[in-house]
Amino acid sequence: MKKEKKPKRKIETSKFLLLISDTMAVVTITFSLLAVFALQDATPLAYLIPAVFGLAATSHGFYYWKAKAENLNKWKQEQDAPLHASIAPDEIVSDDITDIEQGGDF
Image 1 (cartoon, rainbow, N blue to C red):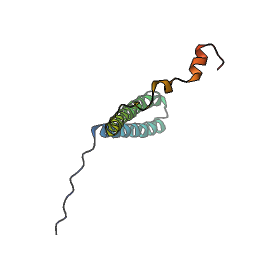
Image 2 (image 1 turned 90 degrees about the vertical axis):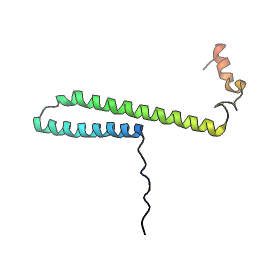
Image 3 (image 1 turned 60 degrees about the horizontal axis):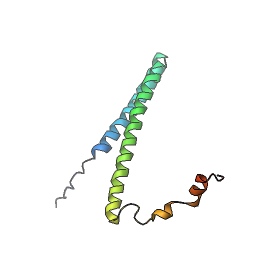
Image 4 (image 1 turned 180 degrees about the vertical axis):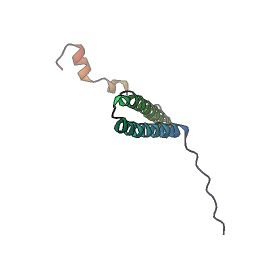
């Protein structure tokens, strides 16, 4: 009996880029720490670490923003209605806002 091969799932591009940026961060931190101990000089940390963590933070921010947008689209399709259709406009305005506009206490 032959086992049926399952088709390989291709990794999404955004997840792949996230993996690359995280790998770059780990490799850079590792080699920077090794260089600092070998050379007894910490100046590379001032430049390499912020650059790598800036890239990683940007990558993660983009990934989460993209995932949020995709989830909102899925939710809208499931609901078949606008996002805030169930909330009446007069329910959004509260008495606290009118007190502030009239100079009331906070």
